[in-house]
Each structure stands twice: as C-alpha cells, then as structure tokens.
Image 1 (cartoon, rainbow, N blue to C red):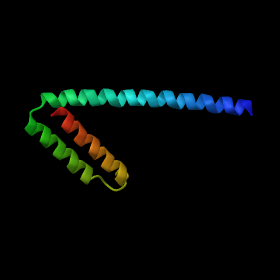
Image 2 (cartoon, rainbow, N blue to C red):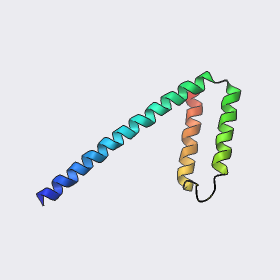
Image 3 (cartoon, helix red, strand yellow):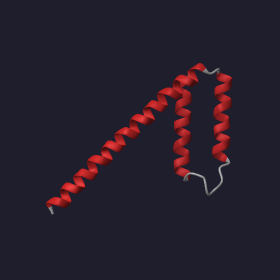
Length: 85
C-alpha cells in the first residue's frame, strides 16, 4: 500500500511539473504574440484576426476542436487583441 501511495505521489509530482512547464510555454507565447501585435498596424491586426475567425469557422468537422474548446480559443484570441491595443 505504501508503494502504491509513493508511486501515485511521484506521478502527481511529475504531472505538476509538466503543468508548470506548459503554463510557462503558454505565457511566453502570449508575451511574444502581444509584442508582435503591438508592432503591427491596427488594420493588419484586424485582418489577421478576421482570417483566424474564418479559419476557425471553416475547419472540417473531423479536424474541428470541440465546440466549447473552439469558443475558449476565440476568447483567448480576442484577449490577445485587447492586450495589444
């Protein structure tokens, strides 16, 4: 029983470490995207995000992210637009 608990705790620690790494990657990408968008003229920003919306709207059903995830993705994209303004 102790071995099982120890193994579960080890797995939990590994998952936590993976989660921290993923969070750091996402935050780094957000900073980079915001910096790039701030260098881009407003017209190009709007055009880029309109293209992204079109791509999200026209993804094939088998390649499409679940509807809820797709909506979360849109929210983060719009958040990036607001952060760059």
